[in-house]
Length: 363
Image 1: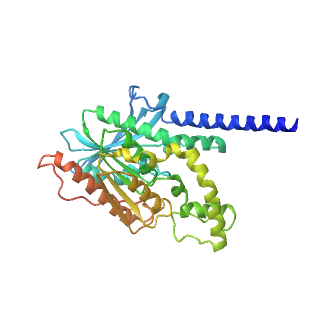
Image 2: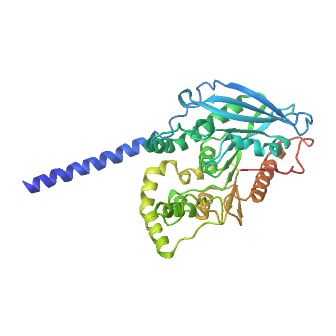
Image 3: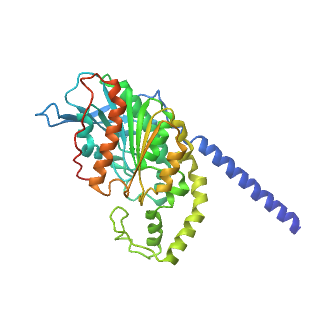
């Protein structure tokens, strides 16, 4: 009787394991299904704000509007356009970082507009006007975080489609700039949507195992054990606390145990599986050698998996945005590369010879 019971129990467990595997495969196959290119955009314009209207050569307009994402979900968006333009413009879709929102567009837009680009950015799910309500349960928050990559990628594709439909935008000259989390998701957008002419991936990375093994994650685990003061710990405000050798070994062991689970359950959203499909679209990778948020090995993994044509710049820096002066350099290099991509499509009169400066006050 005992042997029979063990066989039944073993068969049941095996059946449940196979069922769980099949459900995982099915779930992954449907993960990006919430993209419908034929659904109406249902644009709702809230306001248009002129900036530097007294100087049309340097002035621009910022329009606040919403478009429909999946199942009619409203996606708040900002679009800035040069005040002085007569021809259809090249446009850049900017994907902000994990903790930012569309408002960062206002900090960086002037040089992009002054070099003849329209710039557009949306609030990603869980950020800006789309933050989860206060009191959202941990389980619901985890579910939302799991949905965020798919929503970001598919809503970006919807936004590209809307921009391509506008008479004041040249549909053959739509570019993408993704920063940090925006670079991680933006690489998948570029892999799948060939309406993007070229793109810049700013301090992004791939391979979830390498991504989670960051200084920020390690210190976060240490804070959970009470080894460092969680209230004073901010990975974007150096200097950072250090761990003892014993503490570091324990944290490393935890990450080693968690890594297979992260790769298994989060593999479908890992850009390492898609970045090779960006080719033949030109892509520019910018990464920091001492990045505490997106580790250099994760940045290199994404770069190595991508095919030509690609340009790579490694900076002797921490994560973009931590040092404002360095952030200006990164933005300048990104804009210069985009101008180099677009200049051959401009008349001699419209080509950009020198870039304006970035006057970023905050990130």
